[in-house]
Length: 341
Image (cartoon, rainbow, N blue to C red; front, side, top):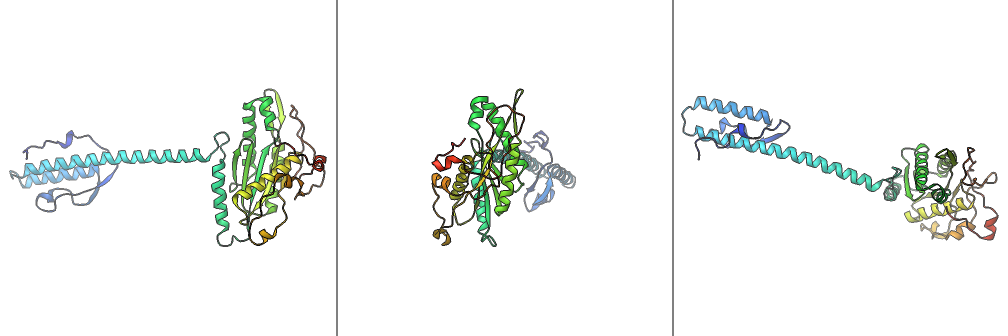
């Protein structure tokens, strides 16, 4: 054992007093001159305490043969404490970076990059959580609302005005969704020019109120490209979901109602309507009808006046008036379906 310290405490890298660590030392003999076992002090405080006790030991035991060894052990101890402190600070910093990265990755995985709304994965998670709440106490007989939204003539916008104009139109739709829904509602971009709004614990009146506000809001949108301004509109399919059907069936029914809204002339909303079947009365969800069957079924929300068709995609300062209900036109009698665009 060397008689002089080989690791001088002053020669070790300094560490700011940012952590408190447990300091353990021998329990007998010269340990009275070392920090108390399990003492929790900032690093600077532990160093000052150690130096003070060493000074006291030098004064009381001058010339003692073990004094030099005690000082060497104290220097070793302090060096280890400093290194542990430095490692702890590095570990905390790396842990914070990992947590931040995980949050960023989770946000990117659940958000649409263009609009900043949630994406399909986020909707499926929120919809499952909504259904789980309905299974809880007091959830029997309660419903949730699904609004399937499609920007009218989006393909024409992309083809005639370019994809940059299409992206701008999608951003306008996303802004309208944020402006006309509650903070508790879930708004997502389902894909392409389709969006979905999930309304938890609601009834048909509440769903219709949101759909009517959105139709009016979409009809007021204007896409400005250079010196030209183009009116926008969107169609909405509404469905009041429950635990009597699966998640996929709820989405299919909202989508089927959206087809009816497109068929009825666009720029409107339509509720999914299906007569209650014996299977549903028995607690089983009936099968999803085909699109042709949906198109031939009566519309749930009957209009009070005939729907006016949106104007073609031309620059125009006048806003087309969008109705809040759908009316089948003469093509329905011929069994023809309006393309979904």
